[in-house]
Structures are given as structure tokens and as C-alpha cells.
Image (cartoon, rainbow, N blue to C red):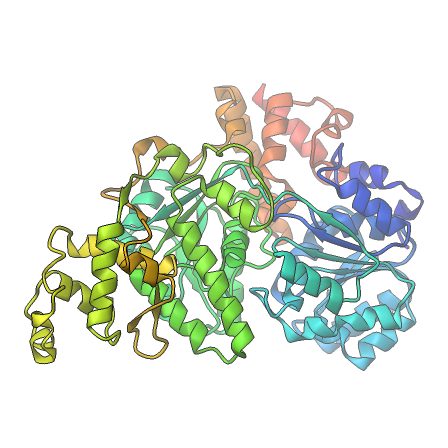
Length: 608
């Protein structure tokens, strides 16, 4: 170790380096296990402070902490943030030239590094393993550990080979970390990484600051714009879409509306993706429109909303993606729009995937669980937590169903009509055709097939086409209908039999008539801490933010790497007079105090 941390306790490192007075959640216990030389598996929600669980032990123990991270694009930001704290951190990846890589390898061999970030592909090379065998290693941290599981939503085959760490370095403690994993994925992580002796720490999945809202209205893009313009006019956010084409068109459309909206998907050149990611991290008020290619490991704390214009593939994916909002603990929104086409498209995609039958079954089950979540009439947070095996005793009061309880109706007769029509058209047609038959439309196709002679022709005129869309969507979600993988035709499942026989009643959600009630709206700057500031404090906070932007530009890092908003708010409220007083503020350690303390004290003095 080149720094003096290894003689310090974890508590001292937390205060002196990271500037925090207290550990959160189970951080202290996790760190104690690693410092004692034991393996750990931890599941902690995004924004819960996972990185401190391996960074602090790496500083307390002799040797270097090796962090295996799947995204090389984010290593730079993580290392920059650590360097500002006075930590000797580096990364090794393909973005560096050979000479720079040689320098870092030499630093590693000389024992000059506290932390080194590498991708799993590099770790698996013989060259890297030989280097590590000649190095004093404090611990291995396997970040985003759900990538090991083929049932996970970010499967990376290289991760399955990381069990070699157990074989090559049997006495070096390892920690595997993830924010999202159901029980099956957790079991697979433990098995494939040979973590059977590891102590497991599973934290609450609850993110109470996130408000969950789901929209089943038509014209999803216009609804999205209503949501962004009324509630997040000045905020950074992420909009997820299913296809690259939709990403491009949505980014252009938002740009034409006057927002800075940048596309991000696997089809873009690497330099364009890197530039868009940097702008999102370093500038305020930028919206990224992306496929799921964007987001893993994104550390930006002040993302105020995550919107989905298409339904994700699983509850795990939804939870992980929405978890990128509100990492700072301040109020944030998770907004999702979905419709019939999403349901059919995803069911077809899962059936057409290259996986074996078991994989397809699991994928379908995960999708059905998400559809059930979208259609639930009770508290969404309770349903979401229940999926991950966690109970929330009372409704949350902070989701659309709690704030504006949905109206349900006895849909038994409508369901029987819909299912009968599918049966009588011989299960060969899609949703739109079935609705045309129910509404009694004499289209050329219906006449050609003779379906205008069916007993169900025209028996559904009491509902609109849009209302029938909602009925069919819910019948698919509930498992009464399946979707043919090739042509999108609807098929009856075994579950449909008791409904058709009149043995089962069905309650359906009434489709939304309008956008959610205005009482759900929150002002863009809805941080409780910010609204608590006096006019004088607000002025000081804005001055500190402006100065933070200048410091960030000088270093070429995102502003939040210098200080989080929460730290600036605390400074604006406390108005410390001395460097010693400044050290009592959460988020200011010795290194940041040395770098910026004098100027902060001067700005405070001028504002008084």
C-alpha cells in the first residue's frame, strides 16, 4: 500500500477518505467479513452504497483490491472519483494504449495501487492471471454478479468462468455484488462462482423515494411528453425503448420539443456512445433515449425519472432500470407505458429466441410476472417487493394505484365473449381481427372467411375497440390466452376452460380514461432538502453548484464526482466557517477538504 489507510479501521477510512460519519444498511458487517478474510455475497439495491463494501476493505487490508466490472465505459468515472478522494486507483482496458497499460501493470507489481478495475475478459487471459499471481491482492470484487446467470437479464458468458478465482487464489477473499436477483439467480451466482461458504447479505429491495406509475393509454409518446414537460422540465432522465429505430425517432422527437435528448444503442459507433454517455453524466438536464444497452453501473445520482415507452422483458430488468432514478434518495419517478403490441411482440421474441425449451419457459414466466405486475389493482410496491420475496405490510401510498385507486369491473361476460370468438375463429387470428368480429365489422376478410355468420359476430358492441384491447391484453396477461410465436394468432389455454364453462368469475381493470390525477404531480425540483432551504440558502446552494461545475470541467469529470447535491445542500444550510467544521459535512473527506475547502469557505463568507 502506498497510502496510510491499511493501518486504519474501516470507520476511520469511511470518515477520512469518503467523508461519511456512519455506515448504511449492512455495510459495516460486510466490510468486517472481508477484512476477516471471508467471502461475501451481497444483494443491495442501486444507490445503496455497494461500492464502499469493497473499496473500504481494499484500503484497510494490505494489497490491491481487484474489481471485475462488465462495462469498460464506466471504469474511467469510477477511477476519477476515487482519485479525487486521494485513493490510488487505476483501470486496465482496451481504451488505453500499450504504453499506458505497461505503466499500470508496473504500478500493480510495485504495490502502488489501492484498487484496480478490469473487465472479466481481461481477467481470463493468461497474461493477467500471471500478473496477479505476482501481486499482493487484498480482495476480489465481482460487480454486477447477476451477469453470471443465464436467467439474469444481463447474461455475460465470461462471468461463468470467474470460478477460476476460487481455484487460483483460494485464500483471497471475494465479494460478489448485485442489485437485482431472484432466488434462482442468487443460487446460480453462488454455484457458478463457488461462493458456497460465503456469508450472504440480502438487503431490502424497497426504494421508497421512487414513485411507480404505469400508463395503459394510447398515444404513449404524447403521454410521455405530458409527464416530462409538466413534472421534469429541468431534470435529467432516461427513456427506454425496445428497438434502435424507436430510440432514434424518440430522441429526434424530444429534441424537436426543445429538450436535449441523445440516442444510445448498440448500433451506434463506440465514440458516439461514449460522447453521449459523457454528456449525460457531465451536463444537467440531458435525457438519454436508449435500449437496454445503456445504464448498467451508471452512477449519476440525480436522475429524476426513468420512463419506459415499451414494456421490459422481466421484473428484474424493470427493477434494475427504474433503479437508476433517484440514487441520491430524493424523490424520483418510474413511468411506464405499455399496450397490446408490446405484449405480443415480447411473447413472440421469447418464443423465437435461441434458448432451449427450459430457457423459453423461464423467459415466458418472467414476462407473465411483469404483465401481472402491470395489471395489478393493488399497491405496486407491495407487488414488486413480493416478487423478490419481501413483504411490505401496508400499501406504500406512493404509486399510481395507491394515489388513484383503479376501478375494477366484473369482466366475466366480456371475457367469455372474447374467448368464444377466439375459439370460433379457430384460433388463427390476432387481436385486431377478433375485435372486428366482436364489433360486427363487415370487412372483406371477415366476409371472406364467413365469420360474419358466427354467433359471436357483433355481440361486443357495448365496448369500444380500445376497451376490447384492454380486455384482450388482460386475458393474455392473466394466462387465459397465449400468442402464437409466428403469426401473432391468439390461442386458448387450459385456464380458459372454466371461464367458458361459467365456473370462474373475472375482475378486470377499467382502462384509464385520462392521464393520472394532478395530485401525483411533483415539481421538478422536488427534493425535500431543496424545498426546505431559505431564499438565502438557495442562493448559496446555486453559487456552490456553479463553482462545482467549474471544478468538474477543470478535472474533466461529472459534477457529482466532485460533490453530490446533498452535500452542497448541507453546506448551504450549515454554513461552516472553518475547514474543521467543513469536515463534519457528509461527503467531505480529507482529500476533498484539501482540494476545495478554502474556496467553499470563501464563497460562504461572501454570501453572508
